[in-house]
Length: 295
Image 1 (cartoon, one colour):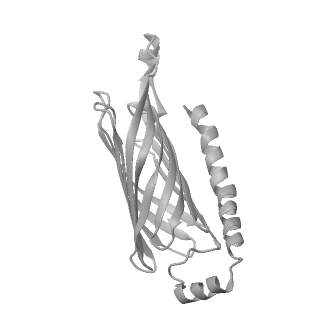
Image 2 (image 1 turned 60 degrees about the vertical axis):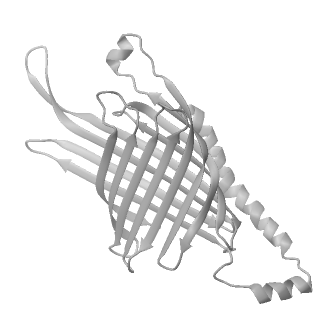
Image 3 (image 1 turned 90 degrees about the vertical axis):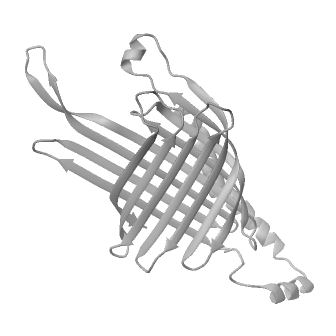
């Protein structure tokens, strides 16, 4: 699955970040050759707050959280991630990733009867997500989008989950402190089931579950004050066919600025899969506190 999606992810990201904004910029440059009547009309109608930015905006951040326990219980937890935001003209792109590794101590008994304690991986998950928006009409904030997502989790019902979607969205609200975006569109999702070593020994193999989906996303941001920002994300990937797995995700975070480029982030994520193995939970949650460095 990774081999299938990686070329497409790299191609779409490189094309969106590098070529499409330049094409849009070239079109804007060509349209600047206006006659006097166009200039007079633009002067009468111009409103700086409604016009798209012709410059380039680039923001990036990296986050890291580590927990290590020793003594009666030994465990090591690592959570890391990154976010990239890029804007040029009518184009807006985001790209992000997350990694979680958890190791806990387990005791095994050797053939000679000696108890051996060692750290064993109990959770290993990573994901990538990307979306590019093209603003159709800067005055009413409508846009079309394309998005890609890939997630791999060793300890869930699925070895990997991936999806792609295209559709329409709108920036429904925007001021100096907050904004709200929501979009909807059709898409395609593939889940690859997880096979345990015991099942592999019995000759079982992973199964690819392909689904057509309706994807709905909403993102709200609010800068509560100069140092604190709140963000809420909702994602729905609803399978069209009855009985197929649907995914529902909610992510809430509060980020507090410590110094110029360093923030403390409290994050809560809930993931719900409608169809899972009998020994797995439909709902999984994650609460974390990490340091974020912005540049």
